[in-house]
Amino acid sequence: MTSQRDPATSLDGCERILVLGRTGSGKTTLARELAAAVGAPHVELDSLYFAADLSTVPLSVLRERTSAAIAGDRWVTDGNKSAVRDLVWPRADTVLWLDYRVVVSWWRLAKRAVRRTSTLTAQAAGTGGRAGLPRQLLRAATGVLTALRSHAGQRREYPRMFAEPQNQHLAVVRLRSPRATRRWLGRVAGPAPRSTTTGQQPGPA
Image 1 (cartoon, one colour):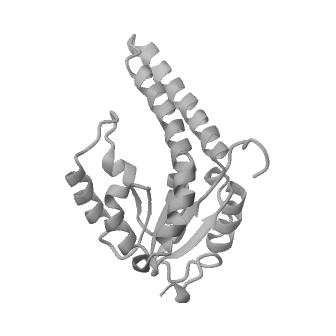
Image 2: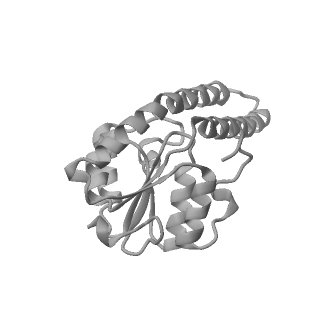
Image 3: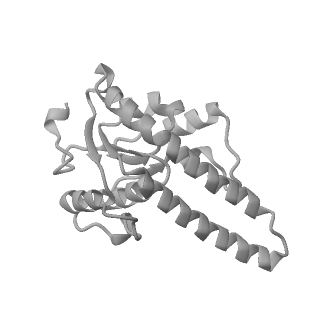
């Protein structure tokens, strides 16, 4: 029962935690550090779907991998994939929703694109090829567009879904800025590593 848990102040009783948030919100970083803090496995849904070369697996494989990954009693997972929501949400007991301003996602996606492009450029210089750069730049542009499309959709759909009878078992914490997330993580798991939500953010958090 959600009444037995108050993840806004403590993670007591929170065994299976799902981190949601639009592309670029930092949900994977938070999930990884939270998992380390509470001593639970971290499951990144994207890693079950994407290969290193950015190819994707069939839906049946994704669902099979997801079911296996969340079969344990304790975990922290991150991802918004609707294709496996019917598997993950019933198993989860706690949701952390990173509902940041869309500019935060844009800023982080831009920094990520610059970092990855620099890495690919260095690799290309050593091999004499630049084949990976167009794909990386396309992925960066796609990420920005995805963040923009999902911003209004998540704010509209998530509250409605949390209110549905089948999701009443979920204890939900809605974190509205990186600063709020740092404060929350400090309360429930000790001082938050600066890497969780750091980076120069445009404007006040």
